[in-house]
Amino acid sequence: MPGRGRTTRPSLGGRLLSKSGTQEQRHSLGSNFISVMPTLSVFMDVPLVHKLEGSLLKAYKQDDYPKKMFLAYKVCMTNEGHPWVSLVVQKVRLQISQDPSLNYEYLPTMGMKSFIQASLELLFGKHSQAIVENRVGGVHTVGDSGAFQLGVQFLRAWHKDSHIVYIISSQKAGGGCVPTELHGLIFQDTGFTVYEYSIWDPKKLCMDPDKLLNVVEQIPHGCILVIGNIIDCKLTPSEWAKLMSVIKSKQIFPFFDIPCQGLYTSDLEEDTRILQYFVSQGIEFFCSQSLSKNFGIYDEGVGILVVVAVNNQQLLCVLSQLMRLAQALWLNPPNTGARIITSILCNPALLGEWKQSLTAVVEKAMLTKEKVKEKLRLLGTPGSWGHITEQSGTHGYLGLNFQQVEYLVRKKHIYIPRNSQINFSCVNANNIDYIAESINEAILFTEGSE
Image 1 (cartoon, rainbow, N blue to C red):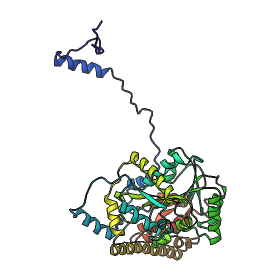
Image 2: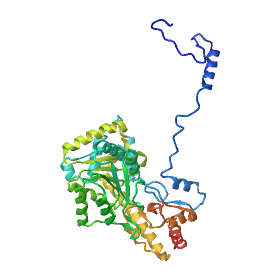
Image 3: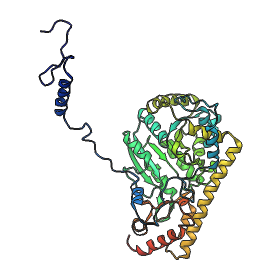
Image 4: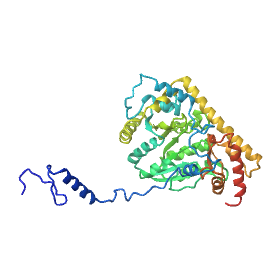
């Protein structure tokens, strides 16, 4: 029996090796011990996730065809095929890198205060009713999806009436519970039931206000409604009134997604006009405001989770809970991207330069759309192509069916997504003729195949 207060170590292989054991003995024991260790991994039951995106880009990169082209980039592209960066961003980035007075201490969990204020004024306008009444605030978030990650965590804990989410999508897809939007996957992975509905009308080749109103009228009381880019969904004043009435009566909680303000119409106020309708009606909501694409700082993804409440007291309560959640998610947001954006938004001269750069990008995209439409007309391509120029922004739907898209990918090596939404900033003088001729050929060769 061991004496009181003494412990014995378990014997490995029937032997107890003392500290005085030889090096050879200890090495031999280690080898024997390793040889009997199980080879099964704790990760052996972890399956490989089906790739959600990127397979199109992967196929493009593996294609050896010299004239291949990829028209599905999410970011704006230059004529040289590089991601667009506003010139004023490059200038400010250089100034910041050479400023010896800057403090590189961790930011507070809520983020850079001046960045949040400047971003809110960009989104709503400096004299917005919500800002004047001090019932709008925000949390500085990480990456393009950080605002949704934070907002979803909050809603899971505090929106207990319903864990059902409806997503209004511009994607050309039918309604269903298999999300295609990234934020739908975030909701789903957090335990919400997600339904995604398209408001794109494939026959009219436009976003249909009736589809939007029908979805809102059908969804249950108290659920969450995610609203993305519906700037091209033209509602009349009476339709807006009807939409607001249903949302209020059903106590639906809106969650907006504003990914690239200024890159739709080049008018910063027009691009977020939908928010003004909700603010004027006193409706509470969240909004994911991403500021990566419209400044061209993709590698420093930065944004805001915006909160609009009924009063300042409720706002402070919500922000306090969001701060607690942010501490667990990332603790401190990065500051370089926020510094660049704040420097531009708070300097009238730099702000003017940035607005001009947005206008140049949008005007170039709209001119490209006009050229594509005209080339298709001159080729005698079947169908009407006015929908191309009726869509706002750098991206737009061609209105092609699945067979026509497949023809472009497989036969013409033009890589576009199944919904035929392309990035028109990828179209330039060097490839526009080939693209137009290929679209014409795809339609002619697949006629009657639907």
